[in-house]
Length: 339
Image (cartoon, rainbow, N blue to C red; front, side):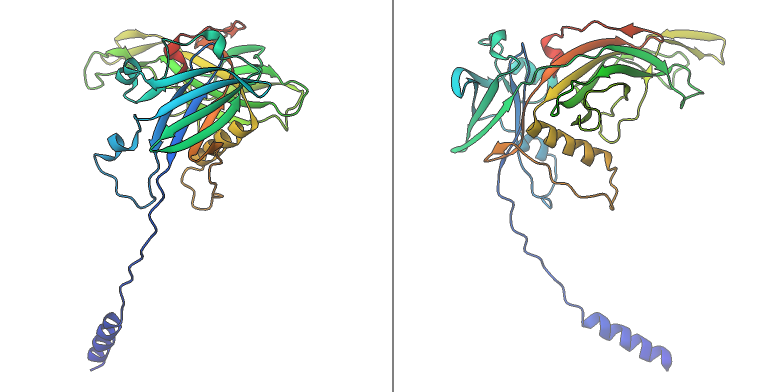
């Protein structure tokens, strides 16, 4: 009899449940800007539309989120006077290479347009809305040297190495450092199931963010630092680079030579607004999905939209991952290297 009472009680509880339907406000459609400008190269932008947190994701999301129809102008400013301008549009060659609609202008660009120490205003006309922003290209600061070191973590993989550097920070407060990197060459075995390895070059498609932050704790000091390899999928950048090595196969009776990684380091100074945005990106990316991590909304310097318009005072270094190598010279990148 007790079992019947329990059953009736359970059914009674179920019958008292009330379904709750939440009517969530639709997110206002806004333009999301990822804009970059650095000395000697044309500015470039990737434009997209924001998505609601609970919006459905399907096969059309990726193709529909990017914006290719907008009027984009960048103005060079000196003493609060706009002294030059450059219209940007979708570049088909870049679209074919990266698969993204990137606004830039190679044909009309003069290298003197993008210079350190100048301010650059951005104006976008999209869907009858005006979106604006401003940034500066700070004066760049060089690394004293870059060198390759053994890693103490992967002792069973002696070809794994780290990129380290010596840097002396200027003795003025307000220097904000941003580092990006990408592998120009890295060799992957595409026939892992075969008896004979087949290593081919599979470089990183884009510059990846390593870190960004102010010089509050390091102001005016000289110190050793290191640049871990970032992951293409994001997350904490803790990967290593590969020196050249011999890969054994056929039960160790044969071997094939595998070349070392070649890495491009982009060492930048950014203004305060850009630093706050990219620092937020770093914090969100390195939280690792931790539910107890401090929530952080990204700050933006875009008026009428979201995202960032960043100027970079840049120094580039091309780094072959060869142990005991020391590099002092800067590298002059090609146009496709900067993306």
